[in-house]
Length: 329
Image (tube, rainbow, N blue to C red; front, side, top):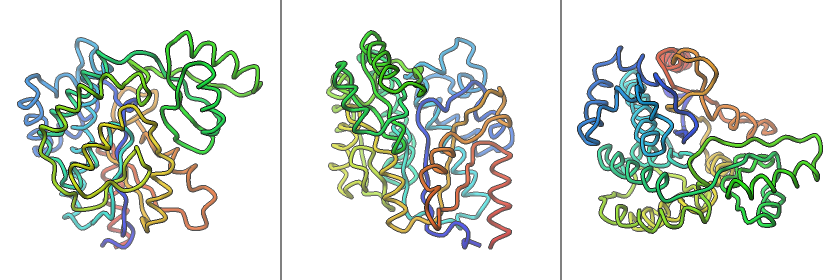
């Protein structure tokens, strides 16, 4: 039953994949998801299900709430998939984009769910309160984007594809950067991202220094499978202290996501399964599509034998993934 997804890489999206109503279909359909959301609410001290599904106070896009919302939804998708497939899919490794790295560590047994929730709750609070600046996605290579960023007191925040780099800085500096970009690269377009700060740049050093205490006070175990580090582009050290140090550095260093994916494939991951989040103009879970699918496809479009990809973000995609697995068993 595991032939299609042998040697799988489990991946988890980060901020930008949240929306009002996420997880509601799974919550209504599965008691285990209801229990997961209740555990999250008990841990955090507020009704996470209500915030995720109704968001009456328009808080889901505030970083301090976005991060627990996404973590819980990602792990709900993972747990239902595991239950539906009888835990028959044994991942070779796990990875997550920014916040998603915490979901990956839970999937690998390095963190328990409650501790991960407390960490991302504090991480999100500090990033929102102590960080500053904004972010801009540029259709440029890392080196060209870095040179342009440094000319304008900005910094690279994420390397998603060889020709897709995100930079961060103060709004006025990014505005000047974009003006130079448009002059140097006529015909190309950049886009401003909706974030509460210039994440993964030097603007997050203050948040990281505060967050270090939370990391040091949280119990971590050696992961049962390899977990990719956004900071290095390679697998985390198996030592929990090494993981803590990398998570500290992750806050103010670029997310090396393209390197993560390529390295995982080079290490033998032949399938990629994404859990959680959702993007698209529709408002309901059924109208959303997986967040990282496009990046995965572009990463491996020139590979002779690209990894299989499946995204599990709602009831429909869950059923499709289970059916696909069973038909190739």
